[in-house]
Image 1 (tube, rainbow, N blue to C red):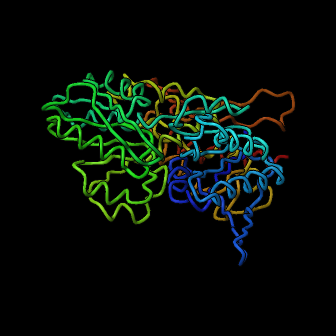
Image 2 (cartoon, rainbow, N blue to C red; image 1 turned 30 degrees about the vertical axis):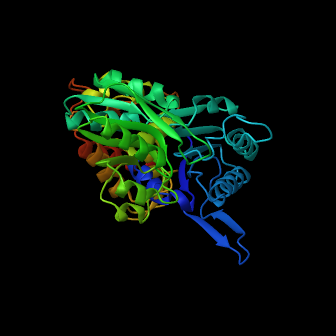
Length: 434
């Protein structure tokens, strides 16, 4: 198992810290030196050699956010990282996924090329504006969906006569998926846009009269489309109108537009930091993506499938996100083999059990803290099993500790605390006879 490092750029530090905490990790410190002309130089404050490095950064404007991510990837590669995984909650410029008129760039493809050239091994992202952007990369892309958060939220509201609406024809598929799993009606907006962020006309296809309408979209930018759609829906007799958008870009007069609109609530994620915008309106509800991305990261570390994150029927009944594939919510991130090796190293150097020891993760613990951490994060059904590893050389024999999650009673019946004491006692005897 490679050491795990989770780091973040400046733009996504808050959500990165939450994701790292959900992974039982501490963020690797990144120092950013800034020059007077605007140039900047990121550097990692600890070794990355041989580690799997997860770099968390959304790439919304300004372009410094993208450049910061590229610099960190390059720095990690030159620091001999084993693998580099770019975790991009919001993939900026995703709306530039094709040529819709002559002599324009395909910005999303250009950014994908830059990330590939920088040396990434994998991408974890969420709700790309267009699914085909995954094909712009030549490395695996784990594409997560905020529906994992949004659908349970709507179900808890228990709306009668619920209707899911798309503000335009491009979002029909997303709205139809929500409507299907919530057993709701569907409405679609048809808009004509003379230029970006402006709407010419908008008509609603579908019956919204006396219904609680939720408009779903991937991005809310100036909120012009959403607010216009809400106004038209309300005029058509809707009982209430809400918006549910994954990425809260909220540029320009977005907050003013929301405040002045008929929208009762705007539900977003924290893929983009809201900073002070949230405090300028009481209509915004934020759902955190920390556990969703922690689950994706853990699946990469343990080579588990992420299919459970797309099991709509399951998470509509149980909206608490399982970070681990076996359904558990917490598990010690201190691997047992690392703990054993740490104990051996400490005993060989005549160290008592109060000093810190680095077990290959970014965080140093004392043995006592490691024991308490494992005990705290292991449920009451877990027992500790001792087996002597087979070896022809007696000096190579040592206990193999396995945390087994099972409803069965494991033998020998021994508590985690007693197990640790027995392990320490064994190693004292083992080392004294070497």
